Length: 155
Image (cartoon, rainbow, N blue to C red; front, side, top):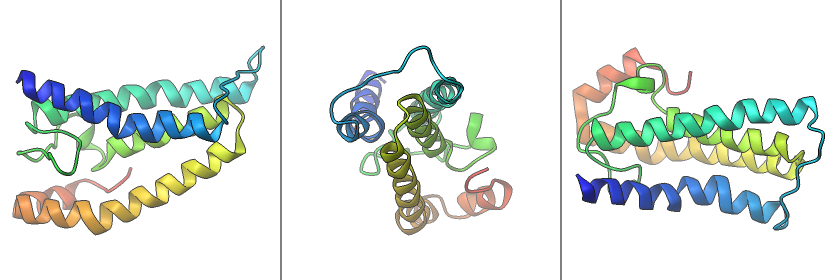
């Protein structure tokens, strides 16, 4: 279990940490500046960013405890994860990352981060349809097919 927790921590930093942390920092030119007092847009951004983080960590926890694996495609879960937020969406982890990115673009009032968020959402969609869903069908067969009939891809 310790090894699984360490792997999840590593892949959390590597994958969503890079996508929702490092790249946005680069997009902002290495300068994170929040204008004060906060505008309504920036406050709205916080209302996306904070729940996005909670969703992300909930999903990572589910992958470790329920799925006995990690979020990394090359170290996947051994069991299909269908509990928690996965009862409502097949991809809540991606929703969490998009919420984080959208929140950051609003908090930092950055159109470039907004464009990056849209690009990432499109990339997630393509990856899910071309890589993830076929792998899950292969690995979990009828169990995954039934899950797909019960739960939508997004919301």
